[in-house]
Structures are given as structure tokens and as C-alpha cells.
Length: 454
Figure 1 (tube, rainbow, N blue to C red):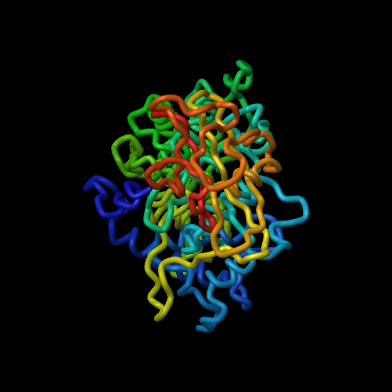
Figure 2 (figure 1 turned 45 degrees about the vertical axis):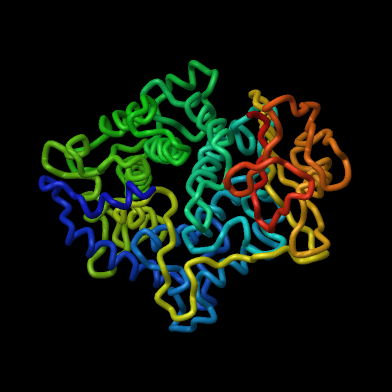
């Protein structure tokens, strides 16, 4: 993600979109996105393509959500209102799908809200863990909807801890990386539906948008841009570049497809204005995006023939021009008293809460689940988490633990016992692993990772 952000300060001399043009595009784009805020401070629309994706574009362009207010009313700043919406029992709906939580993770992170600590009863990372597919490790939600797995990897790989660390174990990211690799089409790109194991599907033409998202997910998951899968994706996009700098998408040239493709390149640290992405007429994808932007209004149109801006296209366009992938690290607010991060620090005694749990016994049988427990104080213990995991979602995350009471060292989990130097260790939010004991203190929002090994 950081590599993508650096692109804007290192535009090569041959690029036709100059630093000053990019800076102007960013500034006016922010002005337009600010105009989309509702009078109540909200960016969440009633349906369709939600304006909350604006948070990633705003953050990439250097604007903190906490500084975005309707008419200067700081009590309705965009971050506060969005956090309250995410924390509500009614969010996201009575029939949620996995991408609801992935969208929430990516956008809350960009808005400066810790996605695992929205409130005492809302942990978006745990909500996502509940969609882990035990029978198809690496997938989130029904595997036929491959989109859910791509954005699951983007969310868990891209939304870092408040200190900038990786909050989930690499083994978890690797499982989804493998799933994304298995779905890469023969032409180097991806589509929204599952193709793994289906030669006919793998031979079909790929989609520009999904290729951008999928390659970004690989890089968010730790895959270098020199990897064969990323190089193949880059070459697929290169082959779709038109003379205008646009990508020839499945449904025609448009801002959203270009935005997703550029965000994929940004996420992988590939310059969208480099030689590979400069057409024979000297145009780059950023040239096309900036040409789609109304001046001086700052909004982007969806199609080149459109006569008015599209909110969704404006989000995708600005995020790409500002150098981001599919989320961005939140900038420091300029509003006095507003911190970089908003987060709930402690459990509320008597209020049910969720935690994400990952159990790695050293084999390929990785277990992932959301554990629901009702704490009796402001913290809980690993023992309480393991006890509650007996009814976790999905089931089977923890089937047995020794000892079953007290606060001593965990000597066996799911039938795998400590032996010599191979023992059970625990890590919280990606911190260094230590010996797993039932008395280990666990805080609100911690991703609890148990690993067996030396």
C-alpha cells in the first residue's frame, strides 16, 4: 500500500499527467467527495453503490474523515457518524453477506476507525472470520462468489493495526493467496465468479475490474510484484491499454474499470505511468482518469460521453489518481482534539462481544472462526476464549483443550499435545508469540492466533 502512495512523488518525465495535474485532480476530487456528505454527516446510502467508499479516496488524498463535516458541524463529522452506523445492531441488514463486512473493514480503516474495535459489540474482523469456509480453506463466503474471497484478503491484508502491523497470521493470508492464485485465468486476469478447477472457466476472458482487485489482494497478502501471478496480471492489463490511456473493459471504456485497474497497480507498487502503461500516443491510465474529471467541479464521469459526474466513479477515480489500492492509511486529522484513530479500548462487562480466532496446528488444517463471549470485566482470558470457542462460527475451531480449567499452560489443543520443543503459542494482533496459557490476558478486538511448533 505504501509503495503505491509513493508513486505520486515519482512520476517519470515521459508521463503526460504531470505532478501539478495530479495535485489539482486530488484537490478538486476531495472537494467533490465532500459535497456528497449528507446533512446528518453520513456517507452511507440507502442502497446500491454506497458512498462510504469515499473514505479510502479521501484518505489517499490526505483528508481525514474526522475533518469532513456538514456545514462545519464537528458533532456530525463523517468518522463519528460512520462509526455509529457500523456499531448499530441494525447494520448491515437482516440478511448480511460477507462483502458487507469486508467493505466495512476497508472503509473504517481508511476513516481512522479500528475495524476490530468499532464498539464493545462490533468487531468487523471477527464478523469476517465467521464466513471462513472450512471445506474450502482460504475462501470467505460461498466460493462461487469469488469476489468475497478477494475482498476478504484485501481487508485482512490491508487493514493494519493502529501501530501499522499485520493483525492476522501470515498462514491465514497465505490460504487466501492460494485461493486467488487458483482462480487466475489463462490470460492472466480474473473474473468475479469462481474458476478454480474448471478448465472452461479458466479459459474465459477476464474482467479489468476484478483483475485490479485480485492482483491488489495478492500484494496485500504479501506477494511481491515480481511474482509470476502479479506479472501475468500486469501483462493482461498492459494488453488492454487503449491509445487514450483507458483500459478496454468488458463493458466498454469507463472510469470505474480504469480506477480498479490503477488501484491494483498502485497496491503492487507498479507505476501506472511507467513505460508499460504509456500508449503509443503518450497517454497513461492517469491521463484518462483526469480527462474524465469535470473542471472545476472535481467529480468524475462514468463514461466519456456522460454530461454529469457519478459519485461512485468519482470515488474510484480519485482513489486511483491519489495513488491508493483499495484502502489507505488514515491521515492525521487537522481538527483540534481528533486523534488519528477512534477505537473502543475495553470490553463492557455483561455485553456480548466477538473475537477472531485462528488455530494453526502446523498442518494444512487451518481453523478460523468468530468466538462470541460475554466478559465479566474489561478484559478476558485465553481460557475463556477457548471455552467459548466450542460454539464458535464456523464450528470445529476448538474441539478440546487441556487443561480445561484454571490458568495454566495449554498443553494440548484439538488433540495435538506439546512435545519437546513443539508447543502451543499465542499471538494477539500479530505480536510476538509467547507460551499459550489459559491465564493470558485478551483485550477487546484482539485477533487471537494459536500456533503449534517450535
